Amino acid sequence: MTDIAASAIALTKTYGSGDTQVHALREVSVEFARGEFTAIMGPSGSGKSTLMHCLAGLDSATSGTVTIGDTELTDLTDKQMTGLRRDRIGFVFQSFNLVPTLTALENITLPLDIAGRTPDKEWLDTVVRKLGIGDRLDHRPSELSGGQQQRVACARALAGRPDIVFGDEPTGNLDSRSSGEVLSILRAAADEFDQTVVIVTHDPRAASYADRVVFLADGAVIDQLANPTAETVLDRMKQLETV
Image (tube, rainbow, N blue to C red; front, top):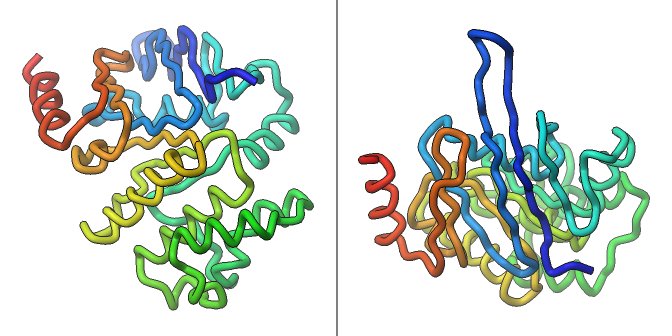
């Protein structure tokens, strides 16, 4: 297996044609190492979410290639793509995306149940213990706080031991305390579980939990920052806005 969990090479995404054509991504090339926590940042309309959606197989590229592990997404059929997203990719969304009629545990194991896979009990117990939701497993989402719901969503993303976990503004609906707890969980997933984590965020504090920040503007990668702090991220964002 390669040490690269995901990569994009010359990734381009355009919408429309002629005078109405919009270049969401312009020949983006970027790699995400196994066990690395990366934050993607940039102004509104910079292509952050489009890049994540293409990397995760939720959207197709106009040109260029996307690879998850050793698998190139452009070669996959719809059925194969569905299987890859289900078995090798985890998702954490801003809006939690939990099924209201299911308990926390049923939400966590839902992707595995759909795939017909039996959860690894030891791994599931480890994830639940790490996220501190062992006493909430029989509760439905309406009986949980926002932070608890996002912990359940994190557990769901990690339960199948995916190659990579994507987070689309995973702390966008949380207060600062719950936000810090969820980010600490994602940080621990990289450090303790050797999990690859990639999040899109606009929050310098959230980005400071990452190993690296990739900055986008006008659909292109224009800068990267290793070992970020909230202050260095904020400074870099201000510089980019000035440019």
